[in-house]
Length: 517
Ligand code: GAP
Image 1: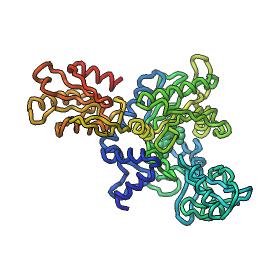
Image 2: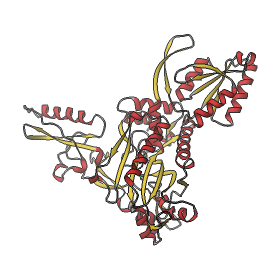
Image 3: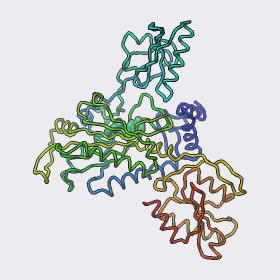
Image 4: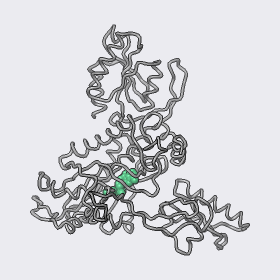
């Protein structure tokens, strides 16, 4: 497929209200995110991070590591391998159980996740006249109701249409498979029954290409933590309660990767396993983790109002799980899971104890008891966080240009903590060597500590605009007052466009507070 067509399709698919389209366009235009293998037409579910994207991504990971590991006494870090002994995935239950229900349309050859495909019978005056179907989206109810009204009109039925009650396709009965239309063709009879689709990517390790060589790309970083729990207990100075944190790649052969980087096939996770006593008040600790995670999201620029909690109903929990709350965020394509915070009991450690034959007990100095600890697991996706940060930051407003005329500008209101470029340094005029020299000196000084940018070309207003669009929080201009008077520089705030003069010492102190926080 031609590159630009692929990109337009990605953009169109991603968007339900235009905001996603704007964000995807900006990410491509300014070098944040590209489709993987773009010169070959792209590769669905894989994305590459360009110069600004990699900075933003690293800043998010560094902020998480600093706040969750380095600034806490009770959490240790880990970096385990992506490919681990395949028995780990048997013990964890992934080999047998890590799958999603999928459904195929035999006619269009399109594949859907059954729990993202919704259907409803269309009933007029107690008579079922057919079915409607729709792929999950914020407007699914309205789309289904419109389709039902069309069906009724085409069937020439009078009388009142009963309310459309959508169910997902996993709840369909065998006798309904032939009646539910495919969303692709609108015709009934081409959808298959839901089937389980395994999400782990397989690979082969070693010279033998037989079944004994099968290994897996990890679908979560968590199992690397459980597999190293004993090493850390035996070699560290940890005492209950304590956590182990890891950031790293995870891979899932998602049936329907979509919504840009929200659900991809290769992504990164930031996970903590927080080990607690089996007799601890896990409900209180769970609540504390939910609050800690919410506060952290706010600290990197998400608005508290955009975050909500989805408490999983008890009857939908896995048998070993005591409770799970997802932090949901208002993404451009709707309110969706950002951070899962689960109380998993002692399931994982007991599974590994049984399968490996190694004891997973710990001696609790405080209570003088020996036990296998329980665990609370806050699990967050880097890419999903990055999309949430972009969504929170994206903004269009109106500001006067150099000549005082009001213009629209696009800006990313990144928190200085995660902004890819922290400050831009501008000499007022590029043909004045004394301005350029001074600006270069300041640039080189700041560059030793932060990712800053030097720009001497174009009108100063245009230079500001370019930085606004990539979310650089501060503009620093060297002008004639700097070199002829008091050495002060102009410090411009991206969001308010306000400017004030500061000395170099004041500037450095201000940047330290804002960026390093
Ligand atoms: N260890 C638990 C676990 O992996 P999960 O809910 O499957 O739980 C945790 O994943 C987080 O990882 C999600 O809340 C999301 O932020 C991120 N995530 C999961 N699948 C993803 C995907 N296909 N693409 C991007 N991020 C994903």
